[in-house]
Amino acid sequence: MHSFPINQHMKIKFILPALTEAKSPYWRPIKYSLFPPLGLATLAAYCSPDDEIDLRDEHVETVDTEEAPDLVVIQVYITNAYRAYALADLYRSKGSYVCLGGLHVSSLPAEAAPHADSLFIGPGEDTFPVFLNDFRAGCPKKIYYNRERTIEEILPVRRDLIKRQLYLVPNSIVVSRGCPHHCDFCYKDAFFEGGRSFYTQRVDAALSEIDRLPGRHLYFLDDHLLGNQKFAAALFEGMKGMNRVFQGASTIDAILRGNLIEQAAEAGLRSVFVGFETLSQANLRQSNKKQNLGKDYADAIRRLHSLGIMINGSFVFGLDDDDKDVFNRTVDWAVNNGLTTATFHILTPYPGTRLFQQMEKDGRLLHRDWDRYDTRQVVYKTKSLKAEELKAGYDRAYQSFYSWSNIAKASLQHEQLKHCIKHFAYAGGWKKFEPLWNFIIKTKGLNKMLPLLESILSKVKKEKDGGTSPFPAIA
Ligand code: SF4
Image 1: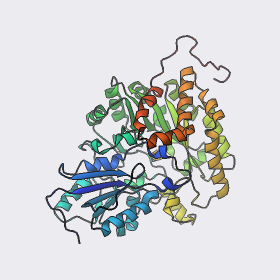
Image 2: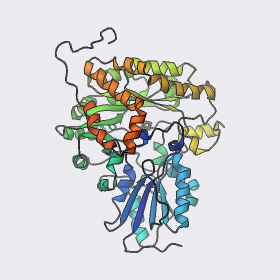
Image 3: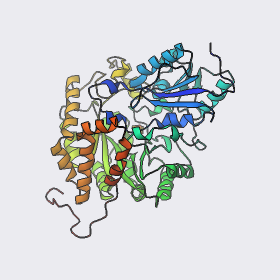
Image 4: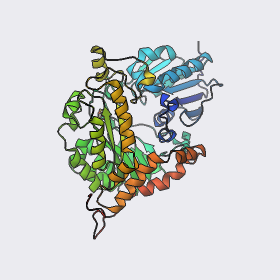
C-alpha cells in the first residue's frame, strides 16, 4: 500500500533503461550516446517546480538502485523491456510508486501490468499531467489511455535535466508526433491506436524551442519531418536566417513532391534519413509501404544531392521477395547512388504491428524473447531465404557498405569536390573511428565534437567554374 505524498514535494526518478544491445558484441557506445531521452524530459516538465527530479539514461550513466524515490517513471522499448521490468520490480519492492510507458507497454499492456503501479498507453503528454494530479490526490488509476492527442499546448522540454556533455547530439528535437503512413512493420499504429496518429506542435512554439537551443546543429527526431506540408513549409520559412544546420527524416514521396525539400535545404537541412526499405515492389506491397511504391528512388537521390543534402538510407532484409542476392544488390545500389550512411535491419515483427499479427496467424514466430527482437537477429520463419543466409547477408551488407573502398566509391558519386570530402569524412568518421569515439565518451567530451559535425554539415557553395566532379569518369 502506498502512502501518497499529497501536496508535498516529491523525489521523482525518470529512467531510460539500457537496451539489450548495450551488452551485445555489436554494441557501439557512440550509437547510443547520440540523443538524450527527450520523451522523459518532456514529461518531467509537468512535475511541480518543487519536485526533486533525477533523469537517468542507462546507456550513458548508471542508475542508483539503492534509493527509493516517491515516484519512478520508466520508458519501455522492446529490447529494454526485461531490464525495465527488473528495475520496476526492484523499486516497487522498496516502496516506490512505479509508472511504465512507451512503445512496448502500449503494445503489450498485459505483459507490463504486473510490474507497474500505473501504465501509460500511447503518448504521455496528455495523460501524465492527469496522473500527477490523481497521484497527489491519492487516487492514481492503474491504466491511463491517451485519447486526446495534442501537443499544441505542450510545455517546454526540461532541457536543464539533460546532461549535454554525455551526448553527441544534445540538440535533438521533436516537433510532431507519429506519421501519416501505415507501414505494416512499424510500431507507430500500435502506439497511436484509438486516436490521431499524426499531429504537430504549433509552428511558433516549435520555432521558440529551436531558438532556445544553443549552437547551430539540430537533429529532428520526428518520424516524418516533411509529413505535414503546411506545417513543414511554415517551420522552414521561420528557420530561414536562423543560421542552423539540421538533420531529419522524410519519405521518398515527400522529397519528390512540390518544393518542400528545397525549402528545407534553404532552412539548413543537410542530411536526411530516408526509409528506402527495399528495392522490390513486391516487398513494398507486402509491407503496405504505399508511399514508396512506383517512386523513382534515383530521382529523389539526385534531387537531394543537388541540394547538398546527405542521405542515410534505411533498408530491411528478409521480406518474402528477398533472395540470396538481395544483400549485394542493395549495397551496390546504395554505393552507386552515393548514400552517405546506411542502416540495415533484419525484418522484425514487433508486437502490436500488422506484421506481427500476420506472422502469428501463419505460425511464423520462432519465439517471444524480446531481447532478441533487435533487428539484428532472425526471430521468424523466413520464406525465400534461410535464416542463416539472412543473418550472414545482413552482417556482410554492413561490412561491405562501410569498407573503405565503398566509402570512397560512394563519396565520389557527388558532383562537387567538397561534397565528396564531406561524405568521406562523415561516413568514415561515423564507422571507422570506434576507439576514438570510445575515448571521447569516456572523457565525457562528446558535445565538444559538435563544431566538427557542424562544419561537415555546413553548406557547400556552388562552384562557379569547373564545378563538376574532379573525377568525371565516375560522376
Ligand atoms: S513511413 Fe516510417 S514512421 Fe511512417 S509508418 Fe512507415 S515506417 Fe512508420
